[in-house]
Image 1 (cartoon, helix red, strand yellow):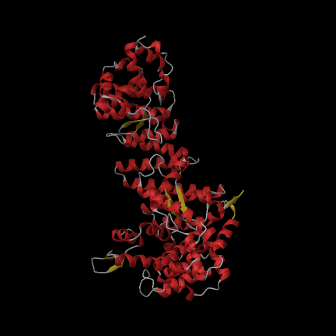
Image 2 (cartoon, one colour):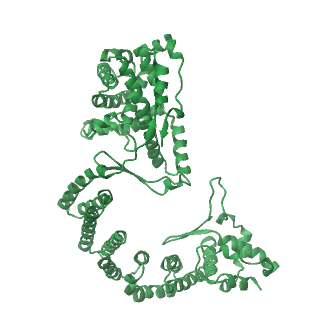
Image 3 (cartoon, helix red, strand yellow):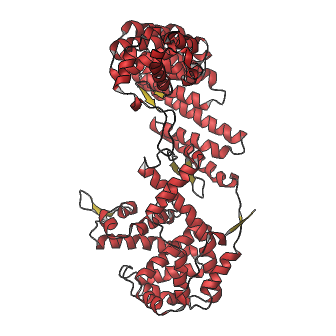
Length: 600
């Protein structure tokens, strides 16, 4: 048997996601000696994955491993291989392989005769697969048939395809899988000379048939496609009505979720939000406002309905460590010793830990994260990191770093900081004057702010956390503004009419002068605690008056207060003297992971 006979015997279907496994079923003696090199080459090419869009096809290795190795890729095809492929009698190949190889010659070698064969082969494959009602499998061959026939201006073939779309498909659009029907209509929406009114009629039928079921995603996509068609037809009023109809549909669906599902409040938020945007952007501002008010009420219910997962810890070793390190110390020594329990994690270490968390947990790359505030409002939506390349999007990676850091801060704050503060308060009756050794003659504290820092630190150490946060958060913002000014950074803007305005804190933290002159690990830590929605965001929650009293004793707030004290201790002259003279502070028992035991 020659190679063409062998291939037609093993490849019988018009389309495959992967054909390489079929080659494995062939016994070597079946292949003639002069065909074995070509057979292995076709086997390797068939092992590649393909990604098909409306405008192109890309060939990718089917498998890429974490050590950098991969399966066969387009880069592995040598010039001599292409020369071998170009000698193939394409019309003798089985349909599925003929489509693939001719497309490869077109996209990689700009072989025009091969492009004609590819377009015709894909169209033939589509017709067979579509007839068998394998609608999802049919999409890629159709995309390639349309794309190539348009690229090479094969008008006769495209006319045949378009006539099928107008005369056969449109009338049956509601009878096949709705998502496949929408994908096909979106494909022709992108083509020139398409009759958009045909798509409108088909989409209307899909909407009318599906509006009473829960296939919300399909109905949303149908409305969106219909609105785009009206815009193409220059029917702006009809497009607006379509968008408003979609907004009403999303609102009604959100209302149904509230009635039918115990977790309906949480699930309904996304649909309320989308409805608000559509109402607002399509001239229905009063309706948008009323839906927004409803959303706020719904969001208040979310924290009550969310399940709490409780973990019980044995912290007896934590208490033992604290007593070992602090018994017999003076108040000032206790505070200095306290600062050993918290630190400014290096950005590089945090980055590596965040990437490791992503790569060690592949499921995390499948789902994003919505961060809610205490009122149930969504304050940030974080996309997942790409587990194949977590560093591809540096801004997204930074958000995940803030989130990872926050988890650590909460644990250390809730377990270590809270118990250390309780120990200190059990031994000392604390007043503001007792923290003078931290705030007096401290070069990092802006001039005239010693007293307010003294009060804030005193409140924190006494357990008056609500007052402490409201003092320390804005004062730390001012402290970093002052540092930025001292090193030549510009922390204000000037409008055209000569009015000065302070830059937002995020801009201050990003000033090149500040980043060049000051420890970036410290800046990153306080940026997350004060200003990042993926972090603790303490400054903004205080500035808007939305932080509750109980929230100010949370792990992240306690960690923030501890870091403020640690930062002040670096530049307080009295602290330095105490450290140099104290014999007791020279010995320190480091905390370990084993100090905290989870009780099952």
